[in-house]
Structures are given as structure tokens and as C-alpha cells.
Amino acid sequence: MTQVTMTVNGKSVSGDVEGRTLLSDFLRDGLRMTGTHVGCDTSQCGACVVHVNGEAVKSCTALALDLEGADVRTIEGMANADGSLGTIQQAFQDYHGLQCGFCTPGMVMSAAALLKDNPTPTEQEVREYLEGNICRCTGYHNIVKAIMAASGQDVAAVAAE
Amino acid sequence: MYNFEFSKPSNIADAVAALSSDEAQALGGGQTLLPTMKQRLAQTDMLVSLTGIGEMQGICVGDNGELCIGGATTHAAVAADGNYPGLASLAGRIGDPAVRNRGTIGGSLANNDPSACYPAAALASGATIKTNARDIAADDYFQGMFETALEEGEIITEVRFPIPEVSNYQKFVQPASRFALVGVFVAKFADDVRVAVTGASSDGVFRWAEAEAALSADFSKAAVDALAVPSGDMISDLHGTAEYRAHLAKVMTGRAVAAAC
Image 1 (cartoon, rainbow over the protein chains, first blue to last red):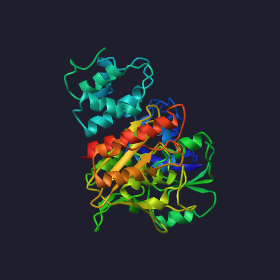
Image 2 (cartoon, rainbow over the protein chains, first blue to last red):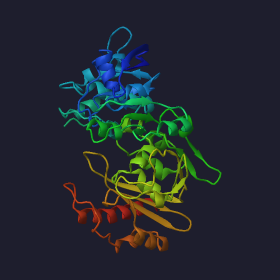
Image 3 (cartoon, chains in turn brown, green):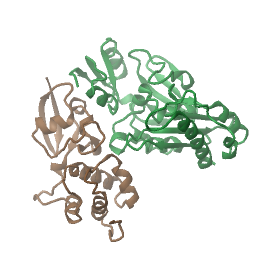
Image 4 (cartoon, rainbow over the protein chains, first blue to last red):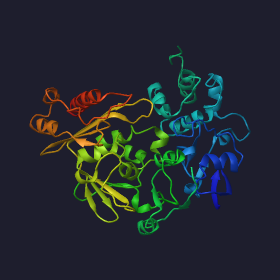
């Protein structure tokens, strides 16, 4: 076991991990932060997306030891300081952007990464950016709508069928 | 995934030393190797991460006008660079955004997946693969499915791309894997045209010499229309027959030329 130290949601954390310990394992089992979901564990589904140094990364496909010193943000770090839902989270609630909710942590983290680089994406850009996030309830329309709304755009025209 | 020792050297010399043991394996962004190790299709006693090596990261234009990309540079960084639009467009379509933030050009070329995108760009551009030991021309580098000219423990430190006058990459996406079912990169230089096809052949990426000759004489989609890719060496699987892939290679070449014109 080797000690790894990183910043998670602004807080310095450390723990003993094996070489093979994935970031998703370190977050969920090591830190007991189970907001990050592991859907497929094969980097297909995107439920495990977190931010590493500001960029969206699939935490099931990154080694904890490779991220020594990294600045990590997870879904637990997306709420406002007073505990209320952050803008993207609130938009997911307002526009029914989740059904079973399993993919939602990854969807929200991907959405946040998109809006950081592209504050007012088109509907097509949102759909393309979510290429690596799979919702098996197939609730994509409302997810896209929620992200468009979170970016402050009018969503009346976004496809609803 | 079986356990392993992990090391993360901060310079090329230390990485080469760490990889000198028979049981050591280099790790780029891990977007292919980690899933492969999870499935126990690969295992190692020592994994050597190359992502902490500063001298292997970043993009610049060299004195001779070539685009120099550090081996540990991510797909996202290449996609954001404006010097070689055809290459940036290719990099921006690999996998998905999260994969592009981790996956590296050196890792992709070292793996030489027969359906990967970068091999098409490297071969069509006539790139030079620089390693810790030598320079390898792309024409000599790709040696079949998952086979390259790299020796054990050799690291891709940089890839140098001559920048063509115009270029285009057409990727017919296999929708489940997001790899290329067939992808064609066309690069037109002052003197000649190079065409590289990925995803199609059981020998991995290849140059389509007939199309190169025709396009060098007449750079138009019409020049490709009369040609045909032989289907003998093409991959045949549940996603497409050999004949289908051969046909797709021609169609994608035509589209790439039309888009580049």
C-alpha cells in the first residue's frame, strides 16, 4: 500500500491505496463518497465522471496513485455553500433531467465541464458533449433541456418528443 | 485487475530506467490499457506512468514548419491546437470528452489499435515518431494489428507532423465503441497526396497507393470514383463484411477529398 494525497472538493485528503486502486474506488471505498457512481466500469457509461484539475475524467479509468496532488471535484462538491442545489443540479430537478438517477452524477459533472468551456452551447453541442454519458432510462431530452436551462438559455424550443 | 507496483517518473531518463525490467509496462492516459488490464487481457508487475513527464507534453511548431506534439499530450490538447486543422478535428472526435482529457497521442500510437484514429493521421501526414532512442518514419512504424516498430521499453517522446496544404479525416463511427469502423485521412502536400485508411484492414492502418496516385494527378472526388479497394485483407465481423469495409474505405476517401477541396 502507498499513501496518496489529493484535494477533493477543496479539502486535502489522503489514504493508503494499492497500485491498481482506481480513482472511483478511492472516492467510494476510501473516502466513503458514494455520490460518484460506477455503472459499467469499462469507461463506456460516464456515470463515474468527476473533474480532475478542472477537466472531466472517467474516474473508473484513472489510477488513484497517478493523481497524486490532483485537484478533484465530485458531485458532492456541486451544491452551494448553504447546501442548496447548484445551478445545474437545480435545473435537472426543474426539468426532470433524471428518472432512476443513476447516471445523474456523471451527467451533472459532464454538464459542468461543458459549460465551463462553452457557457451557451447549442442543443447539438450539448448532445455531442454527452456522447460518453449513457442514460439507460433514455431520458436524454430532459437532460439536454436541463443543461440548456442551466446555461440560461430559453428551452421552450428544445425537442420534447 | 491484478495488482502491480506503480511508478511515475518525472523525466524521460528515469522512465526509460524504470521500463528496463522485463515486467514493466508503460502507461499513457490509460484509456485503453486500464480497461484491458481490468479484463485481465494484460497484466504487469510494474506500471510506469508517463503523464508526469513535463518534457513529453505540449505542442509547438518546429523550425522546419512541422507540428511537434509531445508523446504524453492529450487528445483534448491536440484538438484545441489551431496549427493543423485536419489533425485537430481528428483528435476532437476520438472517444468522448472525458476520454480525450486523459488519452494521449503516444499511448494511441504505441498501442496501434487497428481501428484507432491517430495512426491514419500519422501515416497520411508522413509523421516522424520520435522515441527515447531514435526517429522512426510512420511508413516504417506501423507493422500490423497492434504491432509497431517499438522495442521493449521504448517510449514515444514526440510525434512530428509535416503540415499539409489541405487535409481531412472522415470517420465512419462504430456507434457502440466510437472507434472508426472505417476512417480515412487524406493529406495533400505540394508534391503529392497521401491517403491512409484505418479500421478496415486486418493488417491495421495502410496507405491506399492507387488513390494517392490518382489524387496526386487530379485532387477531386471524381478521381477516386473509378477506383476500388481490394477486399481480400479487410476485417470481417458482425459490424461489417470485408466487402462493406472495402467499399466504405472508398466512399470515405471521396468524402475526405470533397471536404478538403
